[in-house]
Image (cartoon, rainbow, N blue to C red; front, side, top):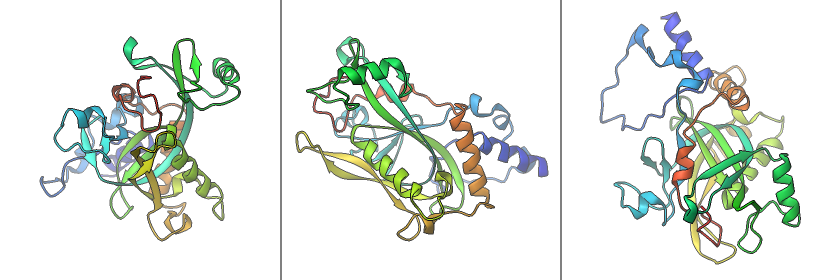
Length: 280
């Protein structure tokens, strides 16, 4: 039993948990004892894909195709094709990259991802009068492709009480979804005692925001401390299992050891706060 527990913890250390999407009340969950995790725990982070999450808009592919359960405003697990109103999460890492997108008319999809210090990114920003923000009037570009500042949020999915880990996920945030992520990082950074991001627990859901350029409503993300009204009330102690697993996930993500289906990012054709929606 000790070995089985160790193997399970190792899998979590490598951020290789798979999201549970089934209704717990609809199926029987067995205790597999020493066999728990066999066949997948050995694969590590490189062998298992961490699910990709996004927010459905009115023009999202799943909504336009009338996929069962899909509705604007829901959080979508694009890897496993499931939909949620909200999630309790343990944010562990925020990675900033500039993503180069091909025009939809030319095939669409992601062309490349760059670190913010990459020479091509800095040159593109310089050509855009120093602005890192893509707009219709001043599109940030490299060659013929559009370049978008993006924050990738890595997180554990927790149970409703915020005590147990049920899976892991990654959400790519660009345009107006950058501000909620920056605000999340800010409140954690300046919290008393400087708690690490992975010690915190938040409820993630959506709300109707408004485009600055057109006034059109769209669905944005928001974060609220799981417990109370402050970050510190939702912090898990350093000696807790949750804290240690969050730290391990952070270290794996920072090293680039966490794998995901980035193809799911390129599958979405909507963009929530860019006037010109045909840049993909």
